[in-house]
Picture 1 (cartoon, helix red, strand yellow):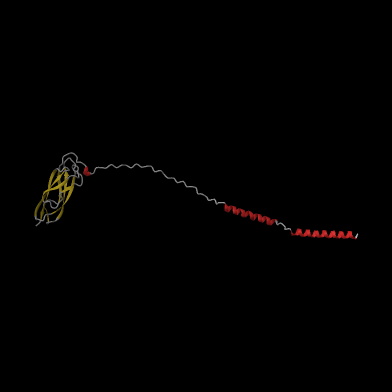
Picture 2: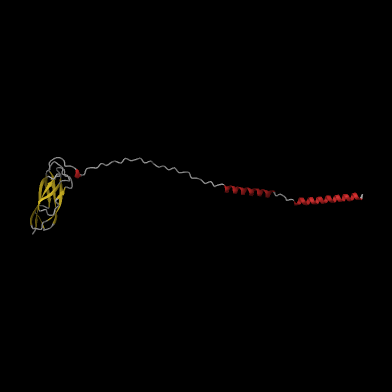
Length: 204
């Protein structure tokens, strides 16, 4: 009887000891924190999203090309200018060459000092039927030339019944007295058809 009691006590002691050991093991096991797990999962997801966005190339917006309108230039037709005849190349009209001196400045017998420079202006009228061209000219023929050019050409055409003044620079002779300068009017073919002259007086 005493042995059975001792066995029961030992058995109870072992049961109590095992219970204590099991309680100690259960308290040592880690307790899972649900909130901490949620936080960890969220942080992991953020890190993965950041790494994914960094790995992916950034999409740049390509500007759309701007369409510009370039007008087509139509070729313009440039008028071709044909050369015109110059007055000097105009042949004289058919007809008769006649002329007349209708004015002269200075007048005949005007007095000048020896060696004095002056300008004489003769005005001629075309009394014929042909037009005098700029190839017509006057020329000194004899007498005192008084420093004048050999030929002086008309500076404008002279149609019939119109007139034209012609000026010539002269120098009075050094010798006192009366001096005469004789001239002629020529056509473009060098045919003389009018004679005229200038008379001056050189003072002593």
